[in-house]
Length: 336
Image (cartoon, rainbow, N blue to C red):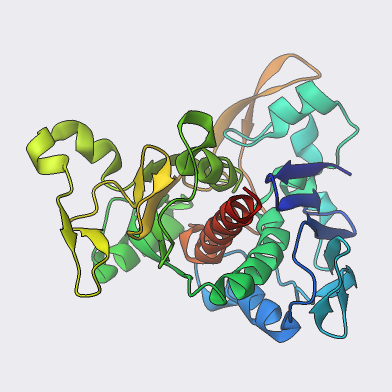
């Protein structure tokens, strides 16, 4: 069973696979003696559940949280915190043909090249969006810690299929569903009340720390901070954020094109990131592929249960990535 790790002071390891017996997470470095509300974690997990979105997969998992270690009497005890979620609604037969005929834009081909048949790729295996469930466990815990620092994290959908208006988005989603296609889009995530002074230059920068976590979310193909790529189209006089003192005598900027990060260090303004998600590659339209065993061309039409667009369910995963990254930076800053 594969695992994937990130973090420096707060070390997070996500493990399992879409059709493994369970998915889970281990978090090392949590301060001890802090109250953790398991009910809050469970409520956060429900936000990524597909039943809230008519354009999501028909797969239904209870996502019941099982805490194995690290919490005693509702408090962190200093030991690594490990929690799992059992996978119950699994249908491996839906994916049996994809070992020989890889799905376009999926990890079927690259996983076979790297791991052979040693990794269970049913449902996408360890590359699946299912892995955002344990990420959200860790994120929900980090968010509870951030509350004590007065830091809040929120997110929103910016666009789907290039449409920003809600009515136009719904129309585009219905058209894609009728045609057997899928849609990607852009979401925004912010961390509010982040203190100035977190991070460092170059590879110790906040952008570097956060990008790794955001790019670990399946389907993410682009990450930008503040004005991002738009800043390349601006004059310096337009892109620069003028400083001023607010009513409390604190330094702020009149705009936030820098996304709350200057030179890799937080400025005290909201840390703002936009993330681009590709369309889910599992579509029912016929697609060209190859048969890796026979060395012949093949055509594949993907059946089974899949998301038409992952953005609505991805928002808690984005908030989790932001919360975990910011909390790790805080712990590193306190250690310095």
